[in-house]
Amino acid sequence: MNPDHCLHPEQTHSHAPKVILDLKGIKVSYGGIQAVKQLDLQVRAGECVSLIGSNGAGKTTTLKAITSLLPLEAGEIIFDGQDTKALKAWDLVRLGMVMVPEGRGVFTRMSVGENLKMGAYLNTNAKDVSNDLERMLELFPKLKSRLNFLAGHLSGGEQQMLAMGRALMARPRLLLLDEPSMGLSPIMVDLIFSVIDDLSKSGMSLLLVEQNAARALGLAHRAYVMESGSVSIAGDAQNLLHDPQVRKAYLGN
Image (cartoon, rainbow, N blue to C red):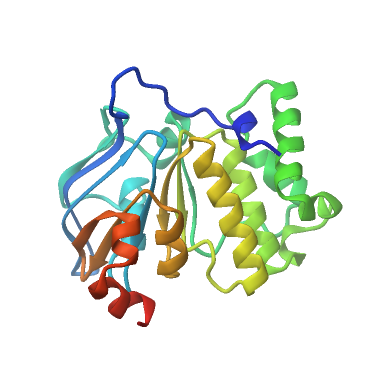
């Protein structure tokens, strides 16, 4: 499948792509702990940005703040020029921001097909939904033979495919992925990263949170390294992939 068919990359007439997501000095606290401290981060239109770091660094908290699942203590988040402070998670989906959550979050007692269609609940054009469903089954062919299976009966890798397919059914302008390779077999990790790479090459804007630093840096344009709630290093992903400090801390060499 050509992912272009289900994507709507941002177009710009300026030399540099516009910033579609802009985090400015955000702070997030919960349970009396400041999990994110003065964090700045940007994703430009058509860009894949990776956010890497160890467990507890604040990566998932950052994604939850971006998607309005956690409130900001300070700072601001701008999506496509609009301050998201007063917006709810479902408002952001309407604007084109969609997240594939850690743990997949599929509806286990619904079928694969029903899960996929849930991603398109804002789309009232039945033909478009049907066409998008066919494209998801081309993108994730393993789901085609399981269309009527309950999602709870799928393997972890199949559930990850389903979660990604459901998110893409919403036709996102910005796709957030939280630990998409967690708990998967090496073969399934390869497949998931291949799909992410195809989406990136098609022009979709992506923010990827991933503990597999080598794979995340290998396909991203830019990357941020997060430690104890703050960004410690940021820059070109390929440069970070070969940075001695990053290699020692996150790549094991």
